[in-house]
Image 1 (cartoon, rainbow, N blue to C red):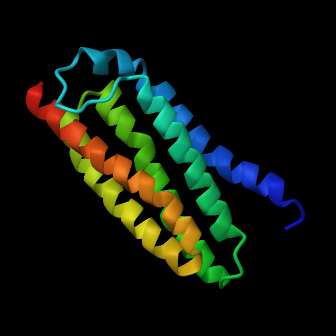
Image 2 (image 1 turned 180 degrees about the horizontal axis):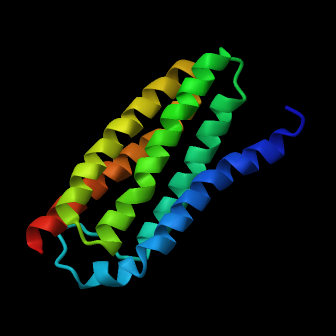
Length: 156
């Protein structure tokens, strides 16, 4: 690859754009979120975009590490396909939750996302361990989001 820095920026931009577009299409979701009954340990609304921005940056770095690895091209392609699928599922969760208020469906969708993130970690691990480790905070946050999602469905 001619310019690794540009490749890294592109890899970081992809999840940031996916997350930003999803947030835009979710339409004022954080205002609605603030009015819902919250389960214990719910963080303040301002924390969500901060955490998601960090997680999207980590995802982008992880994908770049896999993309630029010396692994077999087919393994890289498969790993990036799994990555793309989890990013696709991630995109729709906030729309289901914040825009459509389908709290139970969003929780089930989040379980699908959780499984895809775990699969993503496993395929990245085979290629570049550091890339897999960069996705662990994402899995932890989505686990916490599942708790919040289920709690909000139950309480509202």
